[in-house]
Amino acid sequence: MKGIQLHKLVKSPDELTVSDLPDLEPSPDHYLIKIHAAATNFFDVLQIQGKHQQKPPFPWMAGSECAGEVVAQPTASKTTSKFKVGDKVFGAALGTFATQIHIPEVGLRPMPKNWSYAEASGLFYTAPTAYAALILRARAQRGDYVLVHGAVGAVGLAAIQISKALGMYVIATVNSEDKGKIAKAFGADYVLDSTKEWEKEAKACTPNQRGVDVVLDPLGMIQRSLKCTRWDGRLVVIGFAAGEIEKIPTNRYLLRNVAVAGLFWGEYANNDPASVVLVWDALLDLIAKGGVKPMMYTEKKFVGLEQMPAALNLLASGEAWGKIVVEIPQGKESRL
View 1: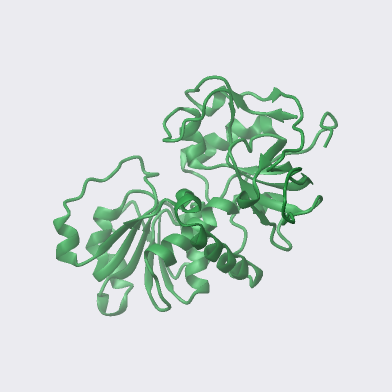
View 2: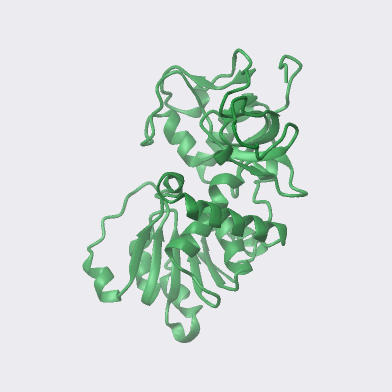
């Protein structure tokens, strides 16, 4: 097999290299997956630099999301396996920047009908993050006005689509005219320029300029968003992709009578597994009905693990939109 294995931290994705490694064998409690596409995440960039809270022991394989084909079921399973050999799946586990991987059943989902490996490879984190932020944390309802920051990132595009599918109005912030067109294409009702003073414009989009009901923030824009959030509004902190963690006086929450919630979707499997099942059931139903469509970046194609550094650099630049994916051809050297 081939993979991007780290024996030390790197300063940038350019230092990543592809290694020839022994093929994986079937596992007692994990599925063996042949990877056809791997998606990139901002935390992948942080992790290879040692800037993420999760620091695996060396050596470790980079990457966290993928789509592929089941090659072998768990060998020691005492129950009926959910997936059979040959099934197309998408999922998440450390080590997806490779041609093979072991993933437990909880980390896999069936690939949506008519989706390609590349399109499905970036679903596992982004779509449930958007859904959980919107429904579990913000408790959004039909008719709500939802302000989505970083609207053409993968989480943002998922949030736009889920909001619209559930009968809400979406106000999207973006930093360029081209990204505004993308947000509109994915269903945003209003698009605002995040490089300007957008707070008053956001309020003007709502009935009687009352302010937005919900704010979804993967960037670090809560302080400014408070200016356009209605009385009793709900704001959800999803991340800090803009680079700074805000320090906000808590009296502002009191005076606005708002609720600010955090979302750490990755920990739901450990702390609230029942909600994980509910979220995925709802999401896969929305996908099957066409409410959520692929969010893969299509302006440039990346093929082969050797192009992973370029894909990660593009992601880190903030110039792209959607989910940046690297397709992984299976060479003749693999026994799979």
